Length: 318
Image (tube, rainbow, N blue to C red; front, top):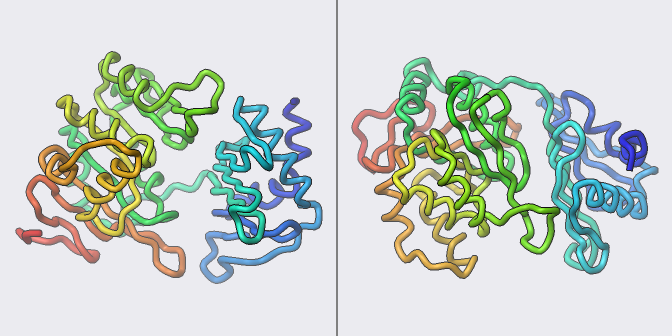
């Protein structure tokens, strides 16, 4: 399919997600869209989009799947996770698994520099994180969905030198590693049954450990990659970083354990394992108005917070 034809097919969505101030576009019914913007006074609006029929949505999914070498079928394979032109993350589920018959969301990726200051840190804590990066500390970034975990990780990457051997692995390419001329970005199959020539997380783990990384990055931790991510830690790797859904910094090991158990894999003491090997957990929250801030920085090995509730913490035990 030509790029021009794909752009034409995407128009009922792209006319909304292409706006630079749009953060996310979502819907649960044909002909209607929910558009979320950065503008805190006009953040969420429902808009009519008559061209977005269910037939059009299925056509969009088929076109994107064909372009990316993925599988989509409204009955047999009704879910599609991929990236749109421009780097926007596309997630769609159609059929009986959704009460309304449709769940679609596009997480937009527009140039919008958010600094660590914007996330609530002072100069002292920014210096603390820079030192941690210089020392190749192992760092997990935690938070709920849509809190800005990947944005924060990309922000931290700006402090690494261009010649750092950064190796990333994701199932959806969102980490900004292109400027590391000595680095490489790996892409895992989101579904082990699909993907044109894509490798599994375990296969990528084997490859990673043979290519001399300085920093090893994992995209969002899930049932598919939690075990592989901890395997990397157990090799003595430094500069390990990941993002993970969790309610607080201290609950990150429990979240890893849940993912490993759900995958049917065995690691009886993920918490003890992580407390010995992970240096820092940085937790980010999003308030009801959509503003994001780093709420916790937790030294996991030492069992203490150094940042909590918007201020530095001195010698507080967990």
